[in-house]
Image (tube, rainbow, N blue to C red; front, side, top):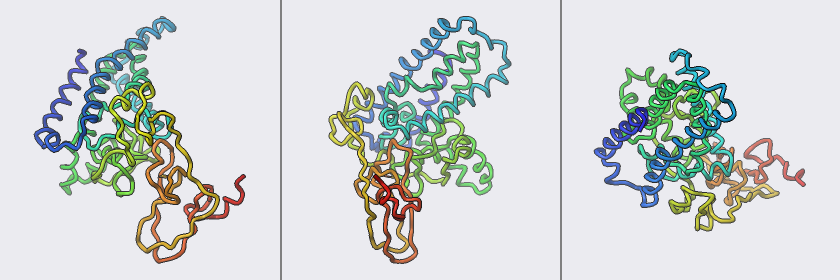
Length: 353
Ligand code: FES
């Protein structure tokens, strides 16, 4: 086993033991399927997918670009390291973000979010095909071919120490929030790297709890990508529920091997013949609303509880729009999703073909 993989595995083991001492696995909400997904994907990713990508990218480069082998071998580590780390993490930010916006990629990424609790093993909880097409692993394979193996190895250790910690239920950032004197330091850290609070928010079940941000906080190592691209939510709180809304609890084999193995659950996104269907209407829904209650307007059109969100926006770029009213009044909710004044009907449905 390469030295970088040994360091990462030891660090995971260390945090895993702390989680066990903290009682996570004694009172675990994980089902038997969850354990299978986590153990199988960890073994598969570390022993097959990642080594295979490194070998294949090296062979491909040797075949098509033999003259580029070792081309940057003389580059200073002080220059190579930040370049490799930043490029790798930026590519992963966009790949991860698209995995929440493109339905087919979301189906591959679902296992990472279907777990009912956090922990070190969630880090590698992925469909095997999702891992095989992670572009930044191929990028690191190419960088290794260019002669930057040392920067790649050090970068991977630094990255996984942050990423595994951000998934771990040890929640190291809590001590930062407990001490008022550390407030400024916490402000900088939570905007720089992924922390348990910001990454747990990404795994939270629904944004309706005011803490979770399943349609944001996509960053892996550096959280500043979310700050930069407007997808950050920092609350310094941890969601009380993790997982996917309306989860049909698919079998572990469907999670890991979709689309080769499909789910036998009729309403599953990874089930045979499943089609996400719009439930939009051509007329507003008029309702009397109550004061000071938060309503979650569906902006994607897939909810069959129109005009409200029911969590069906998973795998799209949409998210529900929260709205509160000051007094009891009648509202004409848009249900066609073409309004220019959401969530109110502006008559746009009359212009639809
Ligand atoms: S179902 Fe949530 S935004 Fe449409």
